[in-house]
Image 1: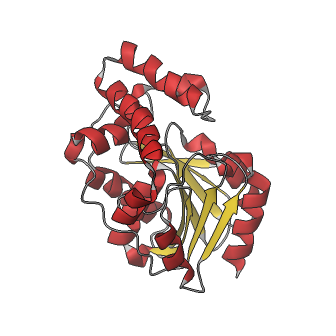
Image 2: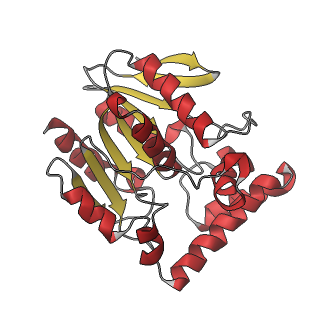
Length: 262
């Protein structure tokens, strides 16, 4: 049975039973509902925790820094699993914020699964992109960054337009310009920016899954190779687009379950 608690003004959804807790962090332009297929699959063996990330709920118009988001994640992790480390499952911008949390709080992470975003801030990643790919990334991300600073009656339609072009999986009525906060942080330095993110160098077992059917990857080949140097880690590609936990839910869930049980 699902229960809901409030942590720092955020509604946190808890479902399932088990010795281990999986905390799920979504990305753009999503809400906690994006993880429903994972909750349904894992709730018989794990406690599944999901919540809508800071700034992503329509009613949440607070400006958050990276440290603010990490602090929110920490409060939620400590609330749902005060006595033992958790398993983190993260996607898209949930990766950026989740990796930062994990690097600052290594002792609170038992295992981690990152979906489709890797070493986003590294020089290796930048060098791995062609000029065309860099322009593609810049074009959609700068539009989203602009949508955040526009009045909502202008920003919301722009954010919805980009989401439609990118085939986002959230319901259109959930998408709004406030979700573009991380892009404004990255490109305009808002709320303290994102240039000081710690490199993702996991000391805990790490499973990186990524979608292969995209015009560019969001990780460098060097980073993948570094992950594979640890035999406890796993790297796997899926033949789908960016939202692999939906487009390849059954295959991904089975692969994640196998890895977690090893």
